[in-house]
Amino acid sequence: MTLLSVHDLRVSFKTGRRIEVRAVDGVGFEIAAGETLGLVGESGCGKSTTGRAIVRLVEPSAGTVRLDGRDITHAGRRELLSSRKDLQMIFQDPFASLNPRQTVHQIVSGPRRLLDHAGTAELLTKVGLSPEHAGRFPHQFSGGQAQRIGIARALASRPKLVVCDEPVSALDVSVQAQIVNLLADLQAELGLAYLFIAHDLAVVRHVSSRVAVMYLGRIVEIGPSERLYDDPAHPYTRALLSAIPVPDPDTEATRQRIVLKGDPPSPADPPPGCSFHPRCPVAQELCRVSAPDLREVNGRQVACHLA
Ligand code: SF4
Image (cartoon, rainbow, N blue to C red):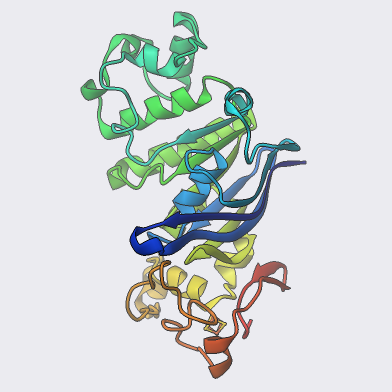
């Protein structure tokens, strides 16, 4: 059953001299109840802005966001508060997202005091903390523990969908796997759906049943994880995947890394045609003048003339 449906979502910002920056430029996908969609791409590709527009931390310029069939794209304050019960967010920097003057109990139970002390204690245990932590303040915790507090806060309203915005990229490598495993365990126990945003394809691999790859504000490939990882169709997905080290030493020794030229172009001045063409190792003349649409190719959708 479809839980979240995002259609033609656009987010534009005006910068000085009336330049319009299209941070998100027509993104669409669906997430089923209990499912994880990984959303990946380099920094600045619009993936975090997409997540923030869905929970309305930034205002969408166009398109629709439906949660459980309700159109929440331009929901008013009261409607937004009620949708926030079902739709929560976990942030990249756990310390920046926790109020340093509040105790863990105050943070987790939220301004509407969703939980009593027993409820907070139960939730803290669920996320791998101890009930005694409820009276402490954020600065008394490590980064991994602070992220567990952020996860507990997101779960207090018993949401159906959690937008996880780079939830492990600010943490030590040794702690990243623990948090990813915790999110997977909570999903299995509570039937949560996740939009899991990350710049690292290796991180989303183990948690996502489907993956969407973004480049310069658009989805360039979206499909089931195995298909995308085993047989990537878009040259950008191939390049991202080629950067992931392989555990098997023999395969790792022969791994051919595709190094992309230069940085992604600015969304304030996107190239004509396929926006990936200045960096694409297989670009043709057509790519410079014509932008490819997403189309069905071999069990996934790809935006590339050559796929
Ligand atoms: Fe590369 Fe052309 Fe495909 Fe764009 S459309 S990804 S430039 S081959």
